[in-house]
Image 1 (cartoon, helix red, strand yellow):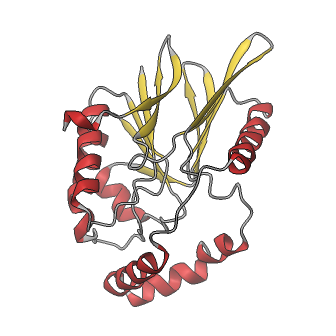
Image 2: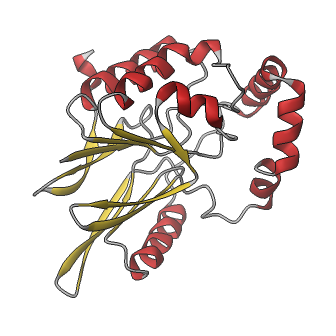
Length: 237
C-alpha cells in the first residue's frame, strides 16, 4: 500500500502560484495512493457551515472530493481549521478529526497536526465552543473577512529554523512512540524532520511533514519500504 501525508499549504485563495502548486501536488502525488491524510492548515482559515464552501477554496475542495472517491482520506484539523463541519465531510467524503490513530501493515501510527505540542492557552480559547458559536452566528462572509484581516496583520513574519522547536517536537514524538506506537507523524512547525529508531528489534519513526509550499515536503509510506520524507518536484507542473 501507499499512504501520503501533507500539511501547511495555508491556502487563502489570493495566491495563484500557491493554488497551482497545491493542485499539481494533489493530482500527481496522491494519484496512486491508497490512503491520503491532510495533516492540517491546508487552509489559512476554515470554519464549516452547512451547505457552504468558501469560494476561494472550491477548486481545491473539489479535488479533495475526487481524491476521497477512490481511497481512504482523512483531514486532521490544524490550528487554522475551526471545525470543518458535517457538510465538508459529506461533500468531500473525507473524515475530519483532531487526532488520528491508524494501522498500516500492522504498524500503529499516531497522527496530529501538532499545534498542541507548544502549550498555548490561546489555542484552548480559539477552539472553544464559545468561539465556534460566535462564528456560527455571524456567518461565513463576515468570519472570512475577519480572518483575512488577521492574516494580513500577521503575514510576513519569518519563521526561522529553530533547533529548540525541532527538539520539542522530537521529544513529543518520542513520548508517543513510548506509548506503543510504531510511528508518529506531526506537522505545524513548518520544519520537515525524520528520525528512525530501533526498539526491541523493531524500527520506530518520527516524522514532521514540514511545509508543502515553502519546502515542498510531504510524508510517504510504502509497504516494504517504510516511511520516508519526500520533496515534491514542482517542475513537473
